[in-house]
Image (cartoon, rainbow, N blue to C red; front, side, top):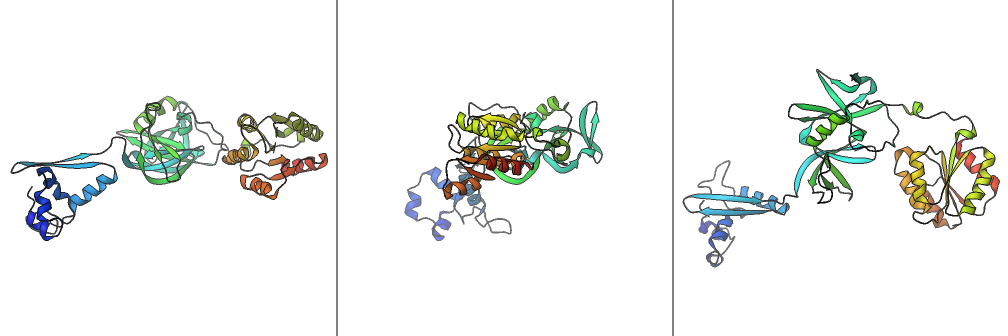
Length: 365
């Protein structure tokens, strides 16, 4: 590699005094300057002085380093140093229930949308016939043991993954889109999680796990014996015909207030479940079918506003009637109640008949 000092001076990149003060290693790195070329002549493909400048700029964006080691008349070596914890890949973002995952696009062969009729069962295992191939089907929620809280839909979304000659159909709940992501290590305490290669921080500040396709393929073999079926929303929901088919949860840290609500609603004939605060209410909600909730605002551990926000995060509970029952009477409190997803706002003290009418209206009795 020959760097012509005269060219550097002519272009006004450096002065002769600055060049003479440089060490041999620093002079070798002059080749990285923009507009400087080592080509003997300018052609259609070389001599523009762009290539090495672009390399240097992009490596610095990754917090990396480029070093030039040149021996006159023998050879020139370029050393690129990039942090091991930092790499950028193209990924397909998918959702399984409420969890988001990033699947490396290099392993994605295609994506398809199917219905239950497209799924066949061979020896008790679900498979998908895609053109001339039969692919094993496995649900991502089964692989990572994700709690299924969303209602089943008619369509299933499948990511066809390939690793060498092996292919598998990965069932997810929806496709989010394609993004360029930065891979970050999970750290000492979380590294080695089966099926997970790392994590990335997305634009909204949320952490998304990145799938390790090789490990995922091995996990898929272990969970392939689970059948994949869809259930229509109408079939999944039990038809309710009388008050005793409905369940209402009473959430209040005051035992006296819960007793007052219970006495008022027992006359309706509905089933009643009690919770002492928001955290307890969330746990009960996950394991029971609740048709409406009466929620106090001021509670320890988790207040009523936060509880409503957490409930509304799940699609399954978007239409669940949430009724605030509180002593807070200001307009600001009512507005905040609406913002977090409360359907009704009842202030204490209240008339028994009024509470009953609100509950009946929200249950459709």
